[in-house]
Length: 323
Image (cartoon, rainbow, N blue to C red; front, side):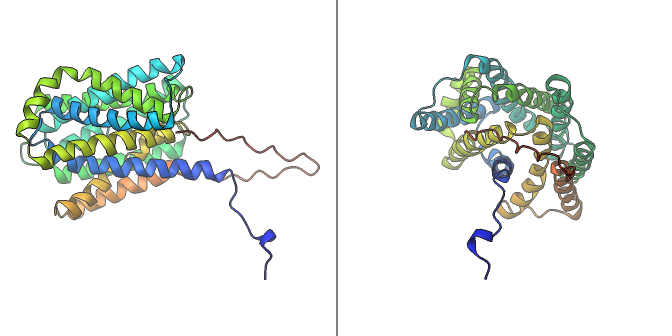
């Protein structure tokens, strides 16, 4: 029998990496579920009202958590990134995406919006100095090909308009700009602080839609309103927080590439929840999306062998976990 003292134990350095991967997984699963909920809520709520209701629900949930955890205001250096990401990602992105998806079919929307991760990688390299390793570029190319395949297989008959395509492209640009702006803020504030106050900024931007929300909530079915609240609490409050947690521990490009798993999960959830049986082309595209994410998240293993007599390398200090 091997003694307990000699039993192999997981390296402590692996814990932050596993937590980051788990947070990213929670994010993509909840963001995928958002597409199913938006289909229901979008039938009763206009784009601006749906965005405002979602953001108010998310801000309320995040505010309660902040009070329980006694989180204070973010430090002053974090506010610039919080404000920009709140305006672009929490505010503009949610409104124009809801609007765009009413103008084009789901396949076209998926095609255009999935330009976002590519823009994130390019902006991250230009503005943040992020590296663009070959594995990341190759994985993103494979995933984008999968997103194109899924989009083509889901495209309807003549359901697209130039205006809708422009709106979806604007959503992709806003998404990319918000992520790149959020990354530096996470160096000064916690993931919970950045998400909470970014959500508040987005809600303030959407306040002009208050009248629409009040009018529509009176006539909307309970299921649509519950879906709107779900969008605020889970795909917004929880998923954006886990996203920020993971983003603080990797590059913007790698996190952006992770979201290519969303189309594949949307296909699966639509199959299970809505009974929409995917075709072989859709399944193939989803498999490509997942394969590309696996490639982009992988790392080349290089085992450094110290020279005889050379001192052992010091263990890397991991960033303190904070949410």
